[in-house]
Image 1 (cartoon, rainbow, N blue to C red):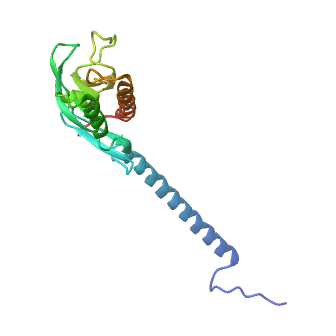
Image 2 (cartoon, helix red, strand yellow):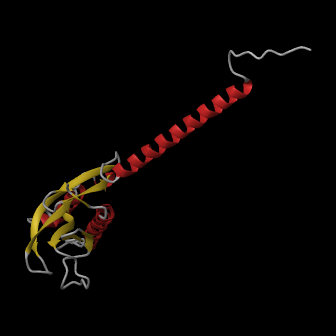
Image 3 (spheres, rainbow, N blue to C red):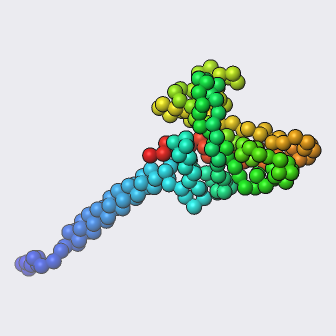
Length: 197
């Protein structure tokens, strides 16, 4: 009878396969955990950090910031105040200005604009408290943009396409179209307004 001698040196085929399967399984679990955590981190930071196609706009006068699309990267603002229709107090507001819209207004209005609001395609106002539940023209300061814990932000287009008088219908239509396009883009971006930390 011939006896087989099993060597105590090295692995058998089954042991080698089990080792390979275990290493592959550990590698896959590690990759999955890393991939899941990396994806979550990217999603959490995208709402607070501007990407290459966005521009961060901070408005300390209102205590808010927002991310604007690249089409609005040159937008700036100037400060103003208004009397609140809700409580009669003087509140801060900012006039959003685009260089291209300002140039169009200057061209069509023959430099007759003396108030910065005349160059604005949109106005954002801040008021204390809670936005009125029964808001209308006589008891609100424009459509609600965002409610925060102790104040709210409203938005309105001050010019409605006619910042000066004596314009031809073509000039009025051109200004109105430019104003509406900028205002729509701005409104869609500004819905994600956040508090300045």
